[in-house]
Length: 329
Length: 299
Image (cartoon, rainbow over all chains, first blue to last red):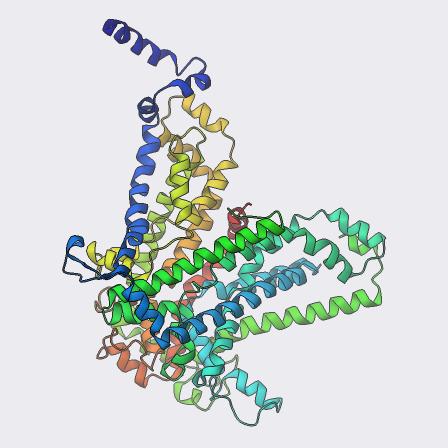
């Protein structure tokens, strides 16, 4: 037996790669294929390890939410406290205010940030002067490439009471009698964040819709025109149905990210006068978790955020799967 | 083109007119803030206080730029920003394309496993606190590498590159193999040169992300003046109200500058921070539009 295998093995090796590669591959053992694909493994294993360290180890960090985590101790020495951190969180009045702010700003962002790019894409598609269209597109992408730090600076300048264009225009139109201190009034904050987001990202979010519109068969429009359909009819009956599946997929994705709206804009645009309206879950986690070193409590906040996001994503996906044929998973 | 064959009706013309007016309005709203910032940055700072500078400087001066370039924190920040953009972009391109290449190989046995754990990262994340603790355990706090390592592999970018490679003829790889090339050679000599358009897109995404990032500096490196970035310096100068008081060292030069610096100086720094990107993006536009379309999730 032994001699037999030794005799046949090298023969097989030298023959298989040349003769009938495909049917053979299924029969070869796991380690043989690893050997043959060693470069593919070498080229992917470092990144798999990277993924584990930087993306999956933090998930393991969720255990901190159930501990009274002390950085100096090892995992075995940590004190387990069950759901204490969550109970404390749900008893904190501030938490509900933060949750309200998060949901308010994400819902406003979802509604406007979703509808306006579609309208903008449809409007651009109706432009037949190609040069004008290209200029509008190029300019509309511009704010996307600028950081939120810069945008926050610009927004603050535009809304300021001395020399801000918004107040200047409102005053000259006699819509207001004296300048509004936009940045100092809490009830303006949600609208300011939403408007800044629209200003920054509308052009960019239009790209996918425009690409989808380009894919629509032009003959449909010609046929509709022959039948006497006006521009609104064409938009309603051809353009919008044509991008329906793109719209659905993007809608599901944005619902999934509804509560994880991040914190960049809120952090950069807020000031001590408006914190009751500006603080969102991530900022709350940052403040408790890192700035005053309550790591376990901060983790509990972050975990609440992630779990709700995942539930929203699956619910949205499930609902859409049921009522339409679209799904992202 | 076909539309020219038709005579436009009255309602069609009205539609066009309204459409053009609205789009011009969008143009103005998008562009005005930038022009205003530019004008103020070139305007005399004492004169700016009077207000009324819109898109043209009233009292032209280069003083503001001279002032900010004499501030060493800004030069230092500029250097770190440039360095992290270059290093982060190059490493991100290599890792992203390498992983995408292995995932595009239909015969690669671990393909399913790797692409699943990669895709999961788009929906799950550990959150801010566990990530912060991990960075501390890895001794990445107060180091340059915290700017590059945590964002090395981004699932979205990998999938964009993979869809591009999927579109290339597989016969190229097979013929290279017949010529005796191994998989690494195929990646480096055959696939990469063909991927230039998609790599340009991803390079732009990575570079913009690196250049615009400030939160990692705020969280991990804010106490180390040798590692702060341009965005972070700008944030400190703009943020005269000091919201994150206990994290930002309140005694440093930028904070003092924030308390005294007039609008014109702030706007000059804003321009310096923004300019590099404004110069680049229109040239790369045709690439990233294609890249976004490739990356658009296919149900």
